[in-house]
Image 1 (cartoon, chains in turn green, brown):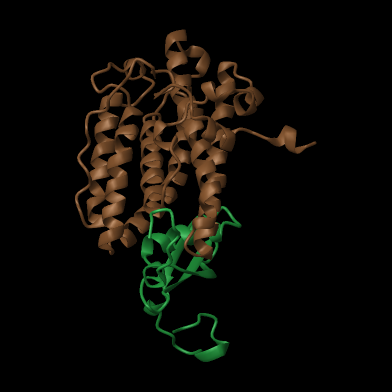
Image 2 (cartoon, rainbow over the protein chains, first blue to last red):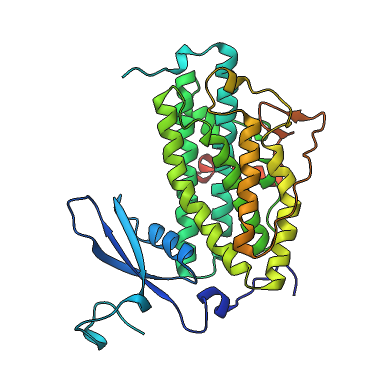
Length: 87
Length: 260
């Protein structure tokens, strides 16, 4: 394989055999509540942050954060009706 | 609150300031085109979106600096599309197209970091418009550098990828160092109160930042060799000679011919 060939390594790109997802939260002003705006798949925290920033750039957010989905502890909803899809 | 303006500057200082800003703006123009050309090499859909975002941000930075340069009497249209290859002042580091993913990441990392380090020297410029412009570019550069940080972590997980990346950094680093000029040169912009610290100090800070990447890739970064300067060195452009014809064909504006 030469350096010019495009290589796919799904394991490396996704950060493991199981995709890692992050939920994205943001707010437009300090008066607004932090709101769930979407999710991104990324192999590490750095890429999750930058991908969230560029994918959800519909507003000039005052604050944005990402949370690894596997760090979320659901209290009520599970399954298909849940807003945040758990692995 | 009072603020200095471009009209307050001595002509020689104003000329040097324009040179540096044009070098940053043109480098951002080339970086934006690199992202455009390489977007389909992104590793996933979010990666495509990120590369496109960095592309538009880079073009936005280019235009914002061109717009600022109109304070010195430049014509925006002439800066953006009225110059030939010999007048473009982009970093030599970006003259040669990437040969692979690791090379792409090495080049844009060094290019983003070096251009940001140079512009960061104006964060406390007496002209608040320029200081604000530097701050805004810095906020965007933070995400561009976070992108390369994230990828360096992934590259660091594979021995072959890491070795290729380090080889590419070793190849491109001398070109990045040239951007800061001869190490012993005096810095009239700092002496005139226009640059926060001498260019030599910024160069040292750049090398310290390079060294910090060792924790991301899991290996020491190549040692910087002293940058060499030929007689064709253009201190006003921070580069040797014109940009290559192939790069010029990529970055030049083609809207007039596309209109027919």
